[in-house]
Image 1 (spheres, one colour):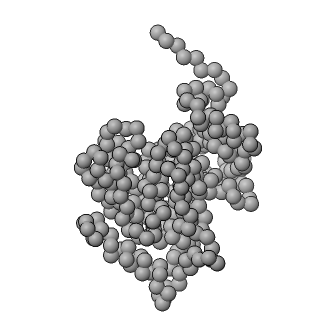
Image 2 (image 1 turned 30 degrees about the horizontal axis):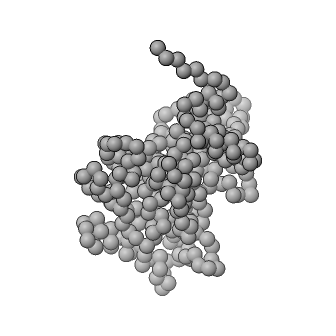
Length: 311
């Protein structure tokens, strides 16, 4: 322990490791993965260069952080930042309590740290509801957890951001046996937070035998990260969130997704989401579009021509 942050987190992490590894503990536990045991999300490794928008990489995100209801909704930049922090820590997330990364790596194309500082503040105050199996009882439960733990930011512009994840969140992550393999170059291409959340939901489900799922309107609003009080009418939610996210995901990813409303009378009772992999030609078209300029993308999606005029 060589810093205040290490001291603050060491005892919590030691207790977490003790509970996860002590076979004589009285509390029932989910067994750790082994050569003959179930494959867990933490057995997989982040690969490539997922922190750099210009390069390809794969981020492992456990189901519990994909199908999550953000009580403090994050915007697109904050969603990407959290994925970056998760990806940077992932390969050692169970072995190391503290992670550090240079702010310049997270800043991307921004020359100032102002937006990064605001995003750190937002993540520190963010909390969410997670449906997961209780590591102690084995029963399903709803957890209310903070997304980021104790952290510190060096003052200098090229300094380090040092951070932790809350022990309760680590306990949930460590037993997860379902995950999304997020391709970072697709994530960075998506311009809406709703599109990123929908893309993550499909990456988590694409390997399932069942290729559809039913949602209540409130559940889908929560999974897509729509803030309370925003888009309260279904028509607005459908137009500005669902259809906008579907348009981007269907144009830029390797999947085709549809969401249909099931009505009872004039009221939408539930939503049914279908998904499928595109055929090779469809995947090539999506890759080609990702490599093209964003200028004109909406027009290409709608099959129209965007005219640029100069004074």
